[in-house]
Length: 179
Image 1: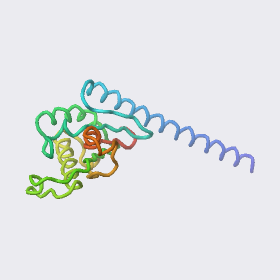
Image 2: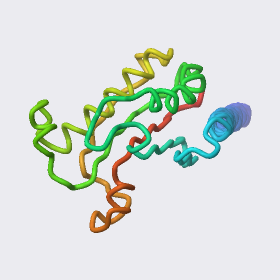
Image 3: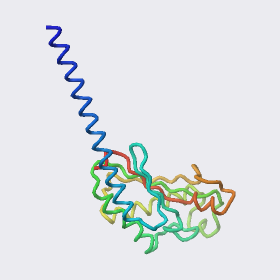
Image 4: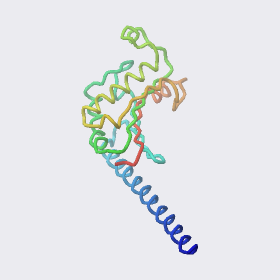
């Protein structure tokens, strides 16, 4: 009797382990497929796509999306973002997190007149505008969110113009099973 219970327990654990491995492989395959689709869509653009453990991150320099010191999307920005919309709108269980970042420069008087007083405000407004546009392109409102990060998490030194340009970015991160 104990032997039968032990055998059933071992078989159950083995089956669960195999099932978990299949889900993990399926998740990887779905994110890998999204990675391939996005790589094809953005050949030649200033967009970086990286597949990280359990997530896919698309980084877009702000100069592609926004006028210098601005937060409104122009027609070129909408074309750039529209390329990712078919991939993103196909997801049903994958969270899409849009994060906006800035350099460490102070906010100028023009933005202050528009109610933008900090880099956090500016990055939030940019992330919100990207999300709003992606929603018009069919991305599920229950799966997408915006976060302003301000000048936190720089990817380069803010001591040079090139470093500042790298820090001004939008990151679209896909987190979840990839379906």
